[in-house]
Image (tube, rainbow, N blue to C red; front, side, top):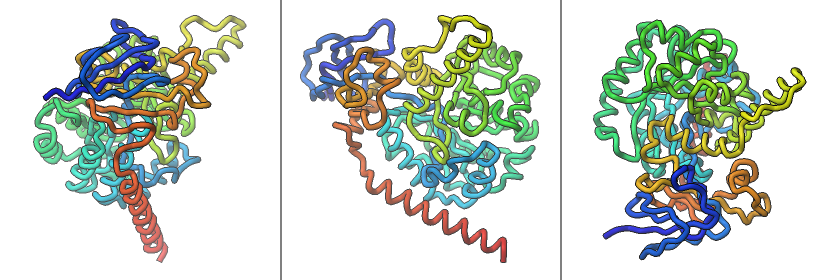
Length: 453
């Protein structure tokens, strides 16, 4: 029997040029797939009244270290250099599989609550063979659409982030691929989260890229950020190793040379920008327009909730404000008007949805309200005091709304948030991350006491 849901009478921003925007429109979902988007649809279906709602595709977060949810806010004033010491060399070595499970479950539910329906989980916390399974279980139980990007262990800053000679264990990656991701058609898919040149010796870099390509999974790597990695010329090094390709996502990209921008564009690579982190932690200016100017389709990501909020509204505004501030300052110095190519609110919504799906390798499934795609749908309450009255629906989403306005969330046609409330057991998820927080803090204190004894 066909399962049908009809989202009725919302202001639809489809992000599909062929479908367009419908000031009053219906979206029909059949068996998890978008069946139709039209001004009016009659169907035998469960009806969700979208009156006073703005209906959009779900946001796509293309890079988040989801495991860090139990240590949310521990490094509010951190620079990137601080983060390596205060998080990766302090908390990460203490993480058990139970901590990873709690972090991924609570972190993924946080995404759903904020209207993020697709997540690239950059999971560099595989300290034991049990850690990846725990991470995947957390994602699975949440119901989010996600790419699980298998990363290295994080038991020693010196061993894993300074010319590391330790490769991600190929046999374990193969085990995870065959056990959990035998098909690439599921709600969860797999990638490889690599550290790259500068952080690893060339042999490790080449081995990890070869492993991902052997298994047919995409690669994601941090590049060109901050005081250290901004000087590595990582893409140029990858080019020298013959490793550039369309299967690789480059995260941050703040200090690319012109040559490196061309290399990424020519190779068909993709870009993920984490604007709030980049501005706040010293990675560099978020390069959204630079990516666009080089023919790329940049996406947005959250990165770390140890230091920044975990929602897409923050990232949209950080990127929008930073880019326009930079251009306006340049124009002031040159005594010339701002160019017509400045970022717009509309483009920011596209970057946060359709571009995100493109970068995650899932544009055929999600990112727009297109008939035939999977039903990853978000409805924003446009009657709330911080959103109403609506003059421009796109601006209402990108510049007015926040997490409190996310009224309804569907992933693959399944309702995960309704009338502003998650349907999951959020009490259990909160208890798990609080227990994880307490255990990690106790373990950190015990480690400190041993070191000073």
